[in-house]
Image (cartoon, rainbow, N blue to C red; front, side, top):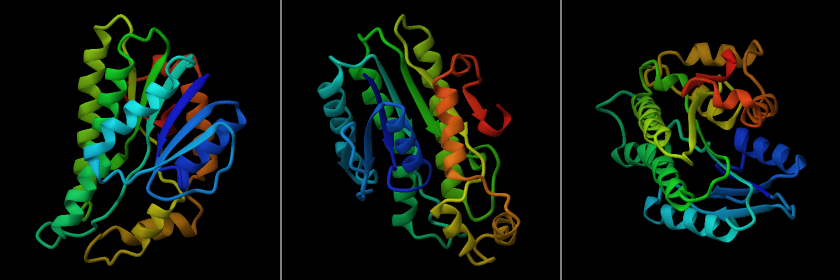
Length: 243
């Protein structure tokens, strides 16, 4: 039984990953704060708000405990993210800043930590994929919280990768930027005021000129990578568009 644990499975890449993996016969545990309507014998929905980080470790431990005896591989995909708050530092809502860091950085860190802990003695393929962003590797005005969270996720993944290399049954980790995708997040970005996000017109142009990738295509490419030998050879920090 190949177990996938995916956050943010109500829309976008997370939903597409789930649907495509189920068609391939994988077992998927989806963690999200809303229902997604998927009814499948191999799908298990965990209703949980990732911004409430105090119980996240327990949630991961429960999933692994329920499946570890039957599992032939485990894959964690930390996909959920939030672009908000969009705006200039000095004008941001403090609660939204805290939520941004909780969802984009703290939650993946906690889930990854619990994943490694629970599977430390399990000699099967174990993979962690962090869905990062170009915003973690380049600064954008108006996205300071998002940039900080994704940059932190990249550094965390690099550090844990070095730790896991020293273990006989270590976890293989990557942090991958998937490109610019036609998701609800892009809709939120396009609704921004120019004063909050000076590049808003560029992102509107991405939509009108058809430059956005589809969640379906990105999910398919990502699954192909995860399931291939190439997964073990690419850089810890990678961009899906360059593979």
